Length: 131
Image (cartoon, rainbow, N blue to C red; front, side, top):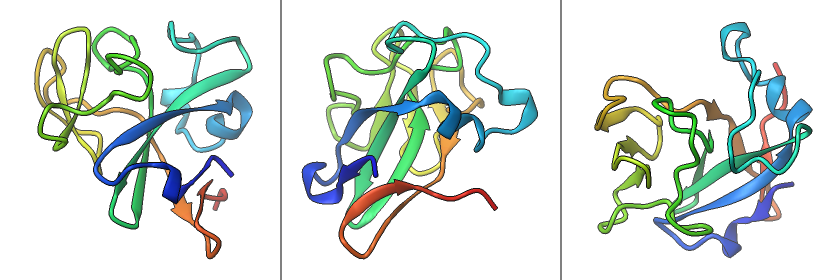
C-alpha cells in the first residue's frame, strides 16, 4: 500500500518513497535503476510520483529522463499551473499524466518510467503485482 486514494487531491500528484526492490521488478532490463536520483533518500528507496485523475491513479519514477533529476518544485508539487501535465522543475518539460510521455521540453519524445498501480476495494493505492 502506497497511499489512500482520498489522501491525493484529484488532478494532482504526490511523491511516495518505495523500496527499490519492489520497483525493480516492474522495470524492463534496459530500465534498471543503476543510479539514484537526488530525491532518493538512500540506495534502497526510490521516489514514485502517484498522480490522480478521478478514481484512476498513475505511477512514474520521480526522475526526468533528461537529467535524472526529480520533477517536483516543492514536496508534492508536480503539476503545471493548469494541473494538466506533470512538469519538471529543472527545465519545464511537460509529461502526460497517464503515459508519462514528454510532450514539450528537452526530453520531448521520451517518457518517464511508468510504475503500474491500482486502487483496491478499500481505496488504497497499491503496486500492481508482477505478471
